[in-house]
Image 1 (tube, rainbow, N blue to C red):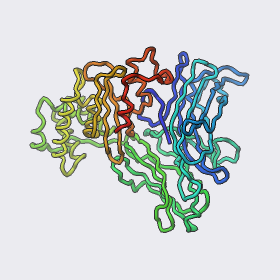
Image 2 (image 1 turned 135 degrees about the vertical axis):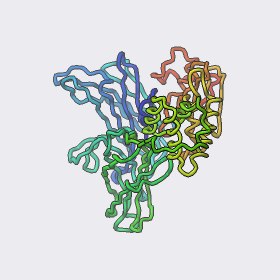
Image 3 (image 1 turned 180 degrees about the vertical axis):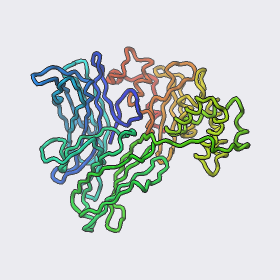
Image 4 (image 1 turned 180 degrees about the horizontal axis):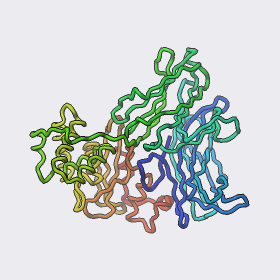
Length: 484
């Protein structure tokens, strides 16, 4: 359970950023939530906040520098507040002007059902720095049946017997509030709990960890692990995942509870992204040019079609494409284009290339601007990467909204009903930009409606969502977004 409240995007992180103007600073806090269960209290939700240290104002105390943040939680069901809390959080004392991030963890016991979490944050030392957000969460029932909790990825953990909000099952854990793992992060601790395995009927149960390529659905067998455990009401598990050899891509970690015959009983999943600078070896001297393949590329279009591969290339492949492009060597570029398709579609590379070439030409015709090729635009990139959408809502005129398009895909790999919102804030040049998408790895912007309506919003400020609660006559983008 994770959501994003940032109004800008960086590094394709699937995390949250609260942001508010604070004179020359902006208060920022990453947020994540996970659900667990304890027999003595029932189902409960953990809410994690990671405050970016330099984004809040520190003042001098007798021991050093310290920040204070006001936090207000409201848990709503059917628009009625059922639980709330408000308090002041003090940061750890900072000495020698070394400002680090600090964390908060809050637990709420909740019955199964749908809820809204409303959070308000403020910098006590800067009254102008206040912000908030609201997000839906779903609480499952872990009380009765054998099940697996949410998977919590932690930044670091150690055994501890001390009392602290951050101690659970004998581990002191600091959450890692990000589902993006760069190349310098090769080992990640994962914590989860297995519930009611003693109700399966076996004295011994199996706990399996698997990693799948989330785009293709392929299981990566080298990353699987199996643990035998004694059946119990609660089984806490801390496992360290070695992802050093995991290539760049989108992945799904699955924790599976089985009986002694390895029959699936329950499972829990965690989606994440990996960026790894493992080099993709490319040697153009080993490529023998295919006349039929090369006849489809005219002499004046070699570099154009080389660049057109970027929307569907992996990060390491993009590096090679750019390196080849910079040489301005047409022969090497021809070999690179052919090698790309031999590697991408070994058995029918010519047919795959012709199909993609047609798509590139179509993207050029529909989406080019006076300063961008079709494949360089956001709509062109999405079209080439995911194919043509199943439905497009296009609104070029609206009383209160910039021109926009909403693309809907019935299926993208294993994902269903994925949507992309493009808009044209410049009102010229056919220059539609991606504003928001619910597709993993794409720009997610919960303030997309506010930004779209900013055309007709006096003194609009996307850093203050409360200013955009007023209705805009003729603004139907949210209805279209939810309709398909």
